[in-house]
Length: 185
Image (spheres, rainbow, N blue to C red):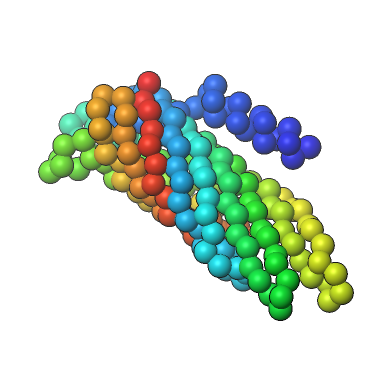
């Protein structure tokens, strides 16, 4: 069942949504990022993560400043490990989120926009645990919210770079920072 939900989320992102940098209403984008993630606050060390996202600019809020609102979806993969009393423990999370991103252009720097965002997140988690005798694997699904902020800089008409940070307020919360590249259509 989890694989079907993950495949459906990927197809939705690929065929339905995308985001925009210095865009107008109706623009779409796909972006890819790599970065670091703090381990869930009660386990492990700093981990790494990948993210694939996309969005659609559905509302231009001001004709003079080009503020825009984007509906977007993201899917990621985060992995951590920990050594506890000589035992290696692994934790991985696949967050799937849907939300909105508000873009605000910076007039002083051409092609630069900052953004704030908020999303609902569904997370598919897999982790090792210890029952006092043996190590075993455990899977669970969690629901949470993900506020975040970032910056996008347009390199040319269709390509941009971005940096962002997000707080994942979910069971075993964590914080991510990433950089990436995106393509506008």
